[in-house]
Length: 104
Image: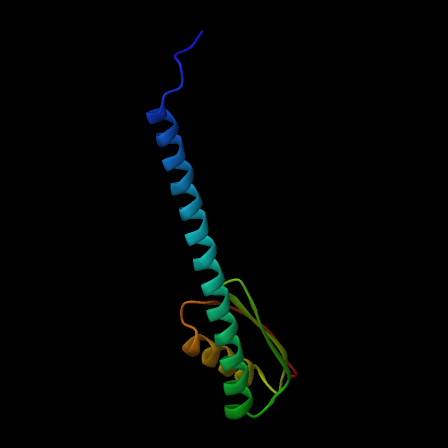
């Protein structure tokens, strides 16, 4: 048979469980905070593009994790690129996926 389980062994196991639970909780909080920040940035991008750019219609800006997705129509390729540049300037650390379609 093996050695008997001691209180110090149980205490070490409890400490490891507590450490892993705290790490998991911290990671969940960080992920939730990052998602909330990305959603806030997506909303800011939506307002800024609508207020500052002429030629973007049917604009939809959504946050997905640390990615911000732009969709809609643009009057030209230049306007499409301007929308992406605005998004990048507002959220420089986010991945910007630009699915805005240029009409010409």
